[in-house]
Image 1: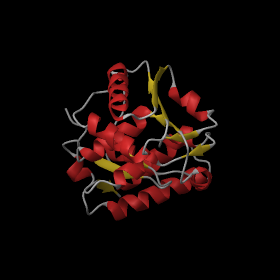
Image 2: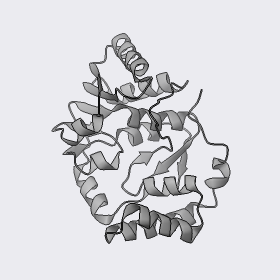
Image 3: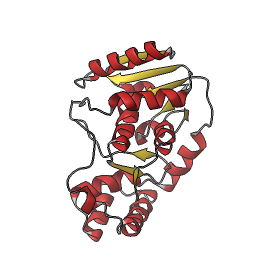
Length: 223
């Protein structure tokens, strides 16, 4: 019912670990900056610090090469007239923050959650509030929400987005598409995502999930 913490997260992401985790991110990013394959580098650093599989997932989502960080930073915009949103990517991070789950602070400045989809998006209690918070932050600006059609329950999410937009008078369009990544990578519009593959290829981006999460009173940020 919630996108909250895994039962082991209080131990895996203990408040005493950020310094060690930050060093691991630095090591892994150093390897990526020098052309090491992602999985090989992750295995090397994960073994060095004796991280669990879940901690290695977090490490992979926080680290990036120097080149990637610099390139992504050049694409950030502070304002926009309209935006295209990677729907699941954005909402799950806000949902996790609302539910007290771990929110990862990436080296590139993005906030990311620990969720992973295997063909299924779970509608959670925080979904409505997450949509409302994003909408309030957008402040009436037009938005195109792109959702993964092959993922189950995205049809229900699309209905929720349309219903809230109609109720609030927000100028939103919601589309179910085979692969939002393809469209966002090639978009000439400002896009909202923390997906590394999209960020590396899109033209301009807005750090939407981070901006919304930063407005919440209490968030479990790590590291």
